[in-house]
Length: 84
Image 1 (tube, rainbow, N blue to C red):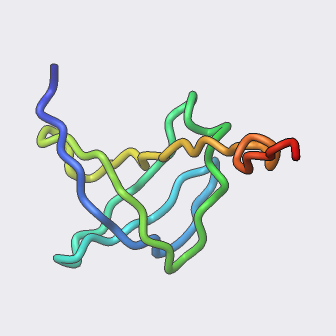
Image 2: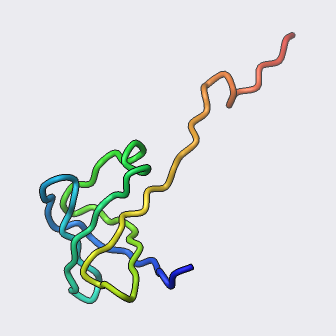
Image 3: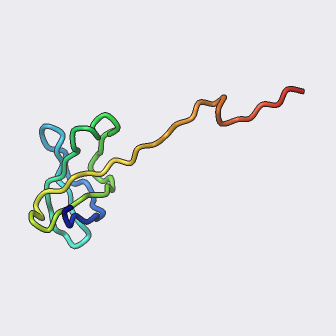
C-alpha cells in the first residue's frame, strides 16, 4: 500500500463542510478532514483540540483525521452480579 504516516496536530479553525485548519508542531499548517465511514464516530473537533492525522508524502497540504472507535459496555455487562 501507500507510505502514509501519522502525526499529531492542533486544530486551528473549523472550515466549511467538516474540514479543519490544523497546525503541526513545526508550525506547518494544512487542511484536515474526516473520511466518510469515520464521520459517524466523529464527535467533532474544536479549535485547540489535538488530533492524530494521517499524511501521505505525496501531498503534505491535506491530512485525514483518524478517529479512534470506542467500544462502550452497558452497565450490566461491566459489573458482575452474584446471586447470593
